[in-house]
Image (cartoon, rainbow, N blue to C red; front, top):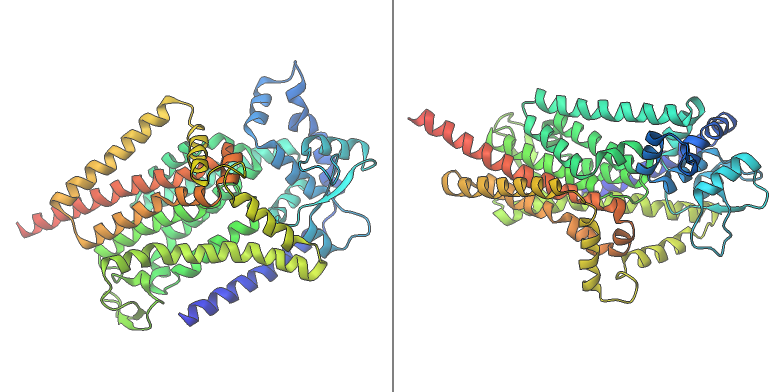
Length: 473
């Protein structure tokens, strides 16, 4: 366990140093080409909505975006403040806004138009130091080369190709149901808004990358006992790139994939049962398929195995996410005395308090839940959810009667816990989740995939039991 903790600390510190260097290096890039590309695209980016004769399709595309955040991300790529050093830019992430310091909100769209067309006179220099803004590492170079319209098309094509790659790999690895489940999950997360919006696509990129790694390398990760390090790195990357949109999904969705594959590996003899709890106990066992030494617990009960399956990856992800984000505040405070640490703590208190600040904590939970569910404004969402849930229940009951075994029961219990992750996240962050339910509802995609994976687990277990009975016959 001590070795695991040491590895976590080393990974977080190395990530902080690498992240700071990368972010600082982006401010060495010139801004004039990016400003020119952004200015040429202002009409299609913002102003087309106010034009009665504007292209209807373009208006629809702009309406799908989280334009407040998208325009802020673009403006953060264009700033180079006179008299400010590279490290100051990396820590503060400046932008000019029409609103003064006493205003609690920013006018990002109007500010971007004025900044590019009239300059900074009469505008107020603001900073956004509580986030890492790691997206600047790839967005700023792209804006140097591409116009906004070209950038939209490029990111859309790459996202679709990346999704197709993940689904294709799932089929190649003989797990087509996982690929289909991922597509179904994406439907419940409203893919058009994800594909069209910079801010909304960040967590989806991380999810796809994590799932692809698991599809290709989970066996190696298991054999080397790197499960904790993997989820730690996913949490670190999420904190570095994301704007607190739907970050828990980068834990829940890969965790569903990992659980299903782990059950298959265990049943096929490719992994030692209880191996997930490795690192919690110092004993070494032999992998029956390779003969290699491997850490695992001794005589773990079913409950202990669930803890190993769920809580260890969750703890590692949370340590990576909170540790990386918290280290931004510490780094900014130590290097530039930004006041970020104090402001961030107050922001956390505000975002985690009961909804509206004075109503009952529990009544706020129900109103937050209703705000998220309200985003599903079409009947087919309810019909499809009913089919997925019914399939999970029916297949589970059949398996319980005909083919239950310990691995299946542990996996089902673990997936049930994963399905509840959105509820836990909603309770902890109900203020933020309710206010921004337009995009935070996407955490419910975790529950969809968890139910889908319950069906996969049960059907696979029934099928395997049938094959074993056939062999005996």
